[in-house]
Length: 345
Image 1 (cartoon, helix red, strand yellow):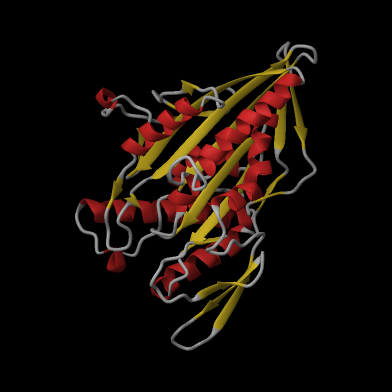
Image 2 (spheres, rainbow, N blue to C red):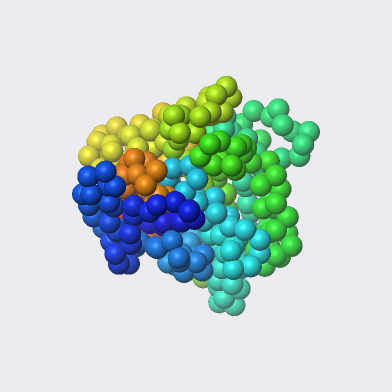
């Protein structure tokens, strides 16, 4: 949980400890306390947040399907947490994750593994998929989610670029291109409001000749568009249409977690492009972590409580044991399960 501070606003949320926070209703003075795996105060920097999730991200190189996504109201700092600013101390999770992957890759390659890495970057805008790495001439391409014969999901006609994670210039250019194409607009709640969900995906494959093994891993880093109340954002026209699409998509995500929490026989993954795309990460085989962002201001109390209650509900979900798929170079697949309980955090 990350508190995003807004200067000049009265605060109604206080971090009590590393895993507990308190919300005060300014009208009646009543308090509510929430407990999570980790709570970050507004004063905590990007490095401390990344340090908390770094081991989780690293497991993608070991052959796991890994997904981390940020959730919260518009203007609560989700894009700042995921992408950050510049290339210094304010870097977000995505550039820091690529740096860590580069270091861990070098270590594993000294042990005999050889890695190949590719990246894609897309946004889901009004339930339509857009390629954030596209050329300007490819703006009209239609993208669909398909399921391959090996049950993996892919997006049609999506640019997938080879990437050396140690090439900082190439990484910076890639992130700048994606930021250029991301759909943003000004509202009364956020002057640079993301109007879409973005999904950065790092595709990993590796072989170890001596051990005659190969593995594949996936790292999804998802910056969700923020939930939005129309009476506060004061949007109309296209902005209002975007807000309704965002809220509907987030509602579908909520429905998925509710069904998972109840251990329902049917999970409504197909109700939105976002949940259908992320189904492999949410269906039990992968590792999933949710980072919830809130604005601790009194003006945002209603949205903050909604986020906290949703996060508390999600925190109770158990997705099963994450599976690491290793293939023999002959083609036989060996699947191993960890003994760690896979839980959305």
